[in-house]
Length: 514
Image 1 (cartoon, rainbow, N blue to C red):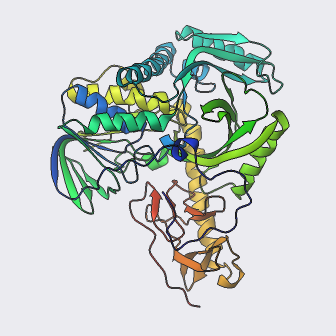
Image 2: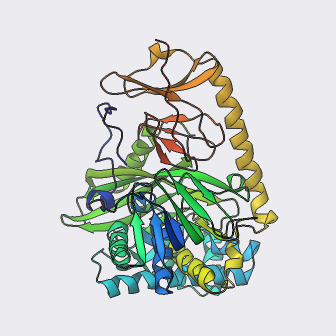
Image 3: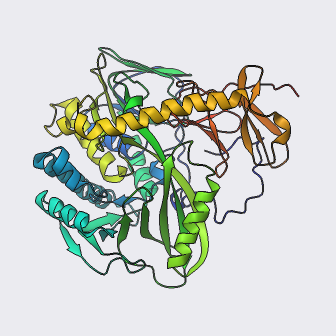
């Protein structure tokens, strides 16, 4: 989504075009907004990889489908991914063995590995030109015992894993876990092709620029938008955060932002995909374009709305990359948002009490290319037939106190602390006079907190600072020029327009005292 036309960004000294190569090299699709009431077998909310994978699988099983998208197809998290198509998800399998057991680890490995094959088969069937390549994936680091345990756990889960040395070629490390036959691709070209194929079916339709404002669960749930309602036998919420929260997802999911630079090198890029786990992770992969090859360097993750100036994240990432590669220039920079569950497994299945006919797919923690693809098949099978046994592992209502309790307590204490601290600070915030061009700040007008941002022309933009989701106060994102909620990850333009949920409403406009 672009900023409103009346907000001019200040002069930008960050390198690269502020978008991903996936969005920069593909046009937006031209599906219409919903403007009527419809009845359908299944309504899917969200046209990213999880939503469109679900819709495709449902049509293959004979169900009629409508897909509703607030923005454009694959313009959200999927269009801002690094697009690694891999079952290697950090130090995942050793934890799964320890916390959930060997059966759970095998199930997780099987569905994610199968998702790579599913994507490859769809690309071949529809003859999609999206740069799909099989490549090895490396998880590297300086904790040899942890790497050895991860390699052993992955092998026992049936994965093509081995422990290797002298990897990566650009950074000193004591070893790596190698997964053979993983892949990368251009995710938006892939999904635009899926959308086109789906939309050609008489029993399927896609509606873009359609914001869902409410979901009414029940025997026949209804999805409400400002210009029409969809009644369905079943609803799938394939959004970052479930729009219907019947199971306390706001206490069991937390949002994180991470950053990516696409750089042009003066030498051939390293082959394969690389990932260094940890709080300050690093991700490296190649993307081949018309000019040669770009190296995608990612990392600098933090909880949305927290962690200080976001511009510094790009700068630190560039410093890291410059120290390791002969960079000729930065072509793109972008950030993305993922939701992480407190026990590290996605939520895929029935949404919660009283919502038997509503399902969700979320919490992929940055690994949505395979996770979203697998979720599509599992949900379609569940909706049109019987629940596959593996859905028990991903059950959104699961109770996993051992792996999830520490993170649950930490994240909810953090959200509560942020809520209180921000409100206290807003009550003593300075006035509008000190806000510079390109700066945003939460200030106080009477007893009301106001989100005020000054654009590149010096014009002031003011909206309520209270996020309509749970009344947390938003924080200024100085790299993207957005207002971000530090509690649950809703994001808004400087003029208050909703960019991503869980909020379903804009920030209210405010006319400040001048």
